Image 1 (tube, rainbow, N blue to C red):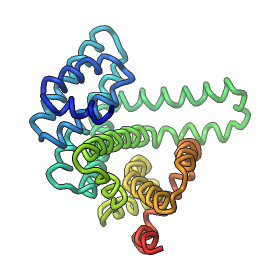
Image 2 (image 1 turned 90 degrees about the vertical axis):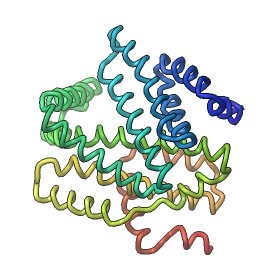
Image 3 (image 1 turned 180 degrees about the vertical axis):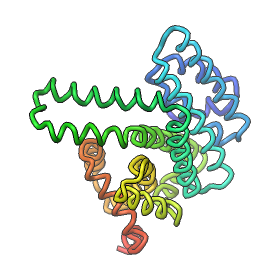
Image 4 (image 1 turned 180 degrees about the horizontal axis):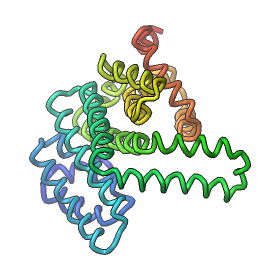
Length: 292
């Protein structure tokens, strides 16, 4: 069923345009629409993907005219454009390493641009998050420790923008990966799995991570924001190692589901994945798993 749907999308440009235009009017299908943009770009090239990406803007303008939340619409459009850009890069280079590096650069430039040209937006965004945090504490009656509340509120102010862009880039990479999976499902079964298991990083993300950590200890402005972005490639590599091990050991998919639920609820797991990715450079866990 899925294969037939994907073949229908790729058969003619008209099919893809109609499907994307209709699905774009359904908010919770925006992820599927953007994954289709990635699929078409990866399979048919930059031009076809750009035309499909432009179609996404039409429903977005309608949403803005009828008063839909501007922030959400702009975020969806930005994600669509970034997915299209990275799809072009992946098609031309076949390099996930380069894709991850460009994602980092997009994130860093995004932080700098927001703080430089849109300080009022940053201030409003941070204030809104801090207010929601305090309201949450009051609502659940856990607002007794004033010192901790002040500490966490200040921390939110120093990482809010970086965390927001981190989440957006993670969404971008997920949708790009989904588009790649769709493509490999039709034309290269098992190809995406091999690519995902082989994802690694080179010196640039490592250098950025070290500099960001040093900046945090030196209390340099924006260092914590940059650290959020610097962690993303290592998180992806860590997930690749986990999936590779689960596949080789034939662990049930239920364990992976529990792992991802834990990842969402326990931030320490993200730190462990980053550490796992760093150690993989020295010990090459995936090669050892293959040998075993």
